[in-house]
Length: 268
Image 1 (cartoon, rainbow, N blue to C red):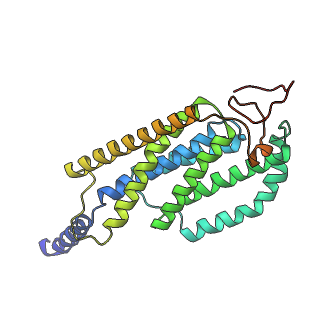
Image 2: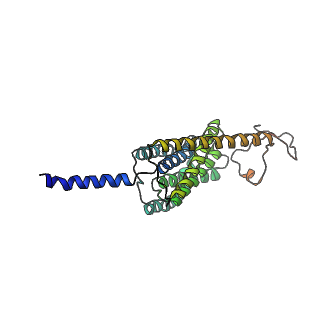
Image 3: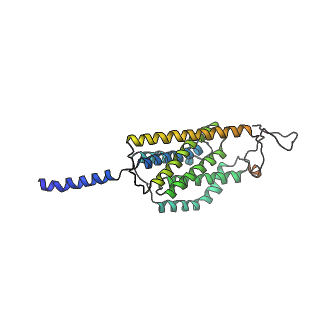
């Protein structure tokens, strides 16, 4: 009985030792959480604008909640990179239908329906690609591309809204962006390093996470402060090549080279 039970005990000990020999590095765990929050902030910034349809308003938050649960349980990517690429390519077949029918029905009351429907269709494609890549990211290249998609989501939300909530989302996004890119560089540099890696729950790992958090908040606060000074010091007025594509033209306070008498508009 003891001889038969010994191989089972030995195999269990070997598997347990192998699991302890290759723990999940703390910087990897920190990076995964920071990247997920970065992408989630960008996606929710678009969803919170209220300019999308019901499907785009419901599906992304549900997908983010499920991915967050999977990440909390320590689960890896849900789909393969090849299948994710095939899904994105297949969406391009659906894009004309979205452009000329689905998004066009939401842009009937817009000043420029064709341009607004193209914007909504592009936002739908952006949300789909971000969620697919979030569920399939494995390599540093995938992570970097996912960060670019998150930044693009914030740019798209800036186009769709002028609410104060965007400023709050931008502040949170800046903190997460600094944290994610610093962790990405540390993760890349740690590949092949001789020094031992820290476990996620160790005191050294907690001190590292705390230091990274304080650094990210400090750098984001400095960027917001400097950006606020530049924003309020430089005069603002509607001009430039892209002003002709404005979906809702408005008058801006500031200095200009010409004055149009009798012009009516909303002054900001």
